[in-house]
Image (cartoon, rainbow, N blue to C red; front, side, top):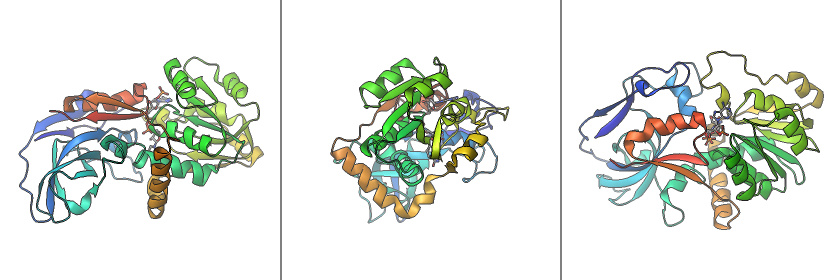
Length: 331
Ligand code: NDP
């Protein structure tokens, strides 16, 4: 078996040296266990947090152990009566070609409804994060202005589209002209801004002539300062992520808009998807329905080859992906 382990904790931007490839035998499955061959592996910004040992809502990765993340794959051996060889499954599994796990620790998925990879994006944790963060905390109303940062990423592109479904005017902020064109051309965003080239304060003010009612924040920092300077009274800010700070070694990155929050009586609320554990069915049903009706599009950036997993992960912090970054696992 080929595996990827974390051998040191990154300081600042992670590098290849933080990861080690190693070979290990695949264990024989015991009673109730299955062997799952990885097909697609998800790399996610939150994993950067687990690579450090700071206290968080989820335990750090242990050093010298296989890194764990979302994987979809196929059962290739089974000692469980719940799953058969050939079944497709989703689970939080190790970064390795084969995982030997209890059948109860993976979920069977139906790849006739959507391609297997979709269970790591629109039909998985990514879609649910967009759904609950936007609708439960953001609560966009028809005609309101919703701004989303990290807009061309996995969560952001779904947030914008769900906001459109709810009748909002949607403005996306992303890091290249190609992404801006994609948001407006392919996904129907009303406006999009390249935060790397625009004068942010001016561009946000211009794109949001009626102010900002909902700001779905994936990135934090100066992007958020600019958006929050345009908040309307009683605006809502679901705090989903702050990727601009994940590799920062200096803490003062903003946002710095506290007085604006007070004056506008706005709500800013952090959340993690597990807060919505009891409502997952509701979210999954809505996302599947919109997908089948053609109201939700999703995009993936797929890097091929298990040897390229660290590269794909690091690419998230350089904006190399449009939509969900995945690795197609081939040996
Ligand atoms: P994305 O697909 O959005 O990938 C990350 C993107 O972030 C990149 O493509 C890049 O796009 C952008 N980015 C990277 N560095 C910076 C920076 N310094 N400033 C601004 N943008 C940057 O990842 P996800 O959709 O999976 O995650 C998006 C956010 O949501 C992350 O912050 C993540 O931690 C968070 N998250 C939170 C969850 C929760 O439960 N709260 C669950 C899942 C995700 P660009 O070219 O635009 O710079």
